[in-house]
Image 1 (cartoon, rainbow, N blue to C red):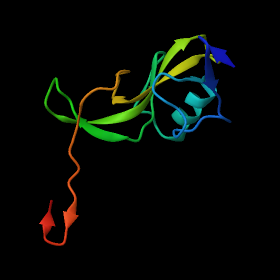
Image 2 (image 1 turned 120 degrees about the vertical axis):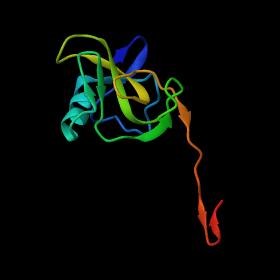
Image 3 (image 1 turned 60 degrees about the horizontal axis):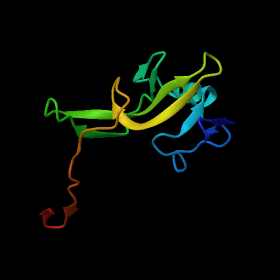
Image 4 (image 1 turned 135 degrees about the vertical axis):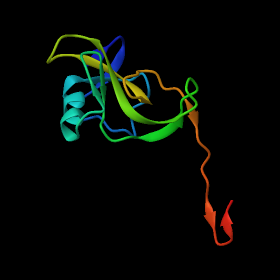
Length: 112
């Protein structure tokens, strides 16, 4: 299946290793993730997997916030919707933003 000249991933072809921000998925993919865990957000236009992906600093508030793998509905009516993968976004949002926190590594003598 194609949408706007791009492949639409299905349950059989989808994997997080393959999909990139902006790629399309079908309703089956979104339903699978919404049933896997209680969703972080689920509406007619935005669905987010319930387990945080990472945490980033929100530049608007300066606070550290969880991000969630996010899908935005772009076409169709249930059960034939097309969704766009948005990457990991703050709860209720469909744009990836925020400041990555530095990774601190432990050594024998303490922190680097």
